[in-house]
Length: 421
Image (cartoon, rainbow, N blue to C red; front, top):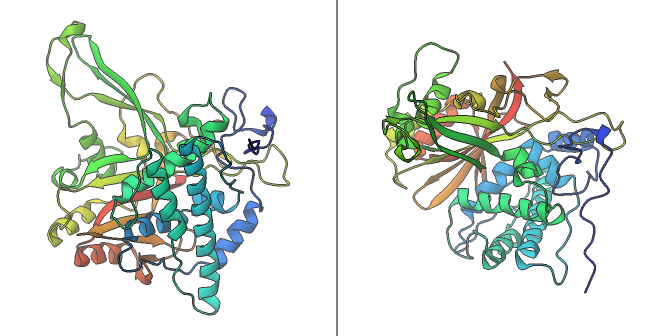
């Protein structure tokens, strides 16, 4: 049997930073093949847009939208393009082999997008075909994963979750004792939350902790709840916080409780913050700034919402938010600081003050997906990516108007960490 290749180099010394309990910073891939500065320069030069192919009968629109959104998140793009992905080797478990194939196909597709962007700028480019990634997703499903079968539609959020799980599968195969929350993808996109019902009678019940790549919110509920007036929360943050505590539970009588109905409190244990990376050729003490992604998933009760409902939903969505302020519990283990060392770049930042800006949105109407992304490292205008079609949209108000006019229902929203207020 072929000896499996080493996925990661030897762990850097603890002084390199980013370790948890002496471990090195989590990664699903080896160190960058290019310095981060080179990646940033290349991305800035290729700030236009390139489409993805969706031939008749292939039903690739859900996958194309997910890929475009991930590609337009600078932190993710830098990681997937700046590292070498290993091919599967004979004899390894089917799910691990399929996960490696998916990572490799995703890297190849993102690389083709980047080359297509350069070609588009210079000569005009045809759309890039996601064929290999589509086959990798189908193989992952056959190996026990959750993904779309060939020539069938699938839910974009489920496919995104399958991609994240593939990253974790590869990482954990080399670090079996690592928690899933400590993998790179877990740190970059994962939330860890504790839930508990604390009753005035003194009983604490319904205690659980969970990890998730998505914060789920029902779009009809978002439209119906009114924001609280005053306080430090924005109207959007207030709505999300109220919805998080809307489901009441009974104080558990089996634990000596009184049975009264109360909303449980939710305590944020880990906010997405990314694992610091040591820059190639730099001092081992120099770390890249932490940047990570809070993913909001809006669920709808129809695939063909009325124009007024889409407009009302988008009116309640804001292009910036502080995710930690949505979780108002004070339970043990509350996340007080960002990052393992408590720093955001060069300055200490409290988790509650961390600002995340909207970078990309997956939308759908009926049986078709499209997406909107901010170009130019998140500083440029909004652009619509609808399979092979790439069209400028404009500012945030123009995006809201475009969604309402087209009855495009926002379903997955990617907020990337930027700063603190």
